[in-house]
Length: 190
Ligand code: PAN
Ligand code: ZN
Image (cartoon, rainbow, N blue to C red; front, side, top):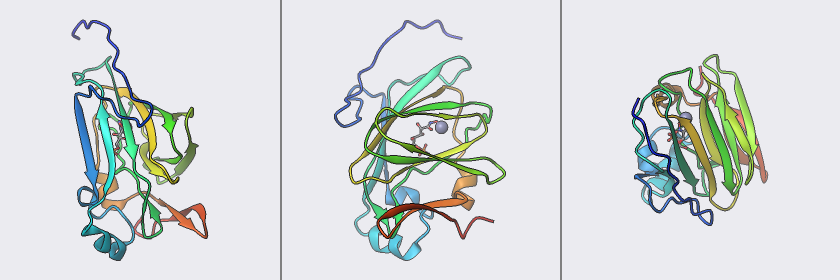
């Protein structure tokens, strides 16, 4: 492993951005085709192609064992029909790598899922530290009316496996019904 000099990088806590980020990824609705449950509502919103979330990668860390990477994610407030705006969600390519999320702003639900389909949800707001144990897929959902922002710290060699969630989604959807946030069964989950 490369011997590195310690460093710090500033997060703008007023909006969750990292002004000196090595990389900023923007995810619009068109980047998330097929991930929302309500297809007609997705088609209707497609013309606007709203920004759903941005990821600010603090540093371009080499993906090697022992190093940590960190990023912030800013998820906009909004819904596709009754399903809240959310991240794509992934398992780590190296399944035995955990992760820590720390809430900075807004309100969200942190969905985690074991390969068996067992789902676990943690409510998050500013100050919540939420732990993803190894082997759990994870997705964040903005359940509030302002951007939901969190910091993520993870092993730099964890990698991303988006495939299984792209195919089957999560076993649970996070929806607003009658003004309340509910977890409901995903009809596409087999
Ligand atoms: C996070 C996520 C970030 C965006 O940094 O990558 O919130 O979510 P998706 O990667 O699912 O689009 C993380 O969990 N890194 O491992
Ligand atoms: Zn992750």
